[in-house]
Amino acid sequence: MPKPIKSGTRSFTSEKAQLMARKEELEENLEDYIEQELLVLPYLLNLPHIFEEATITQQHAILKEVFKQGLTFKEGTFRTPSLHPEFVHNRLKFKQLGLLIDEQPYDDFWRNLLLRRARDSTF
Image (tube, rainbow, N blue to C red):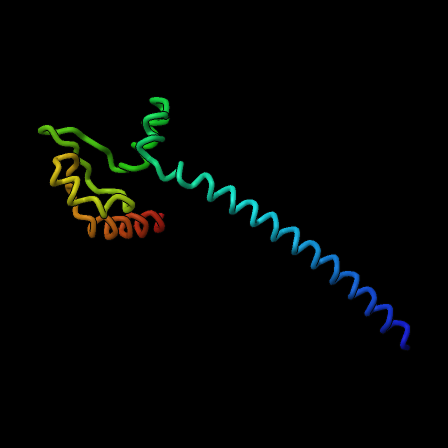
């Protein structure tokens, strides 16, 4: 009877060693991945530069993503029904400078989004 216990212990110790080695390998890969992501992050945060370097098709794709409900130019000012949540903190600044007017308050954006999702989930 002692042999199976010893055999099981050896097997367990061997498997544990393999798993620990694999864990360390994955942790190293994760650290490398995070380091690479952190190197790229400053470039990804520079949206004006990305926009300037983009092709016209890419610029249109960016505008469609940022202004999902459209962007119009009326009476010398850009207008949109609502701002993307990432840009809401600049809402007052945009309006004061006459650069952009969101015609629908931000609070309504979330209410409308929830209503739209609820409506879409019923179909």
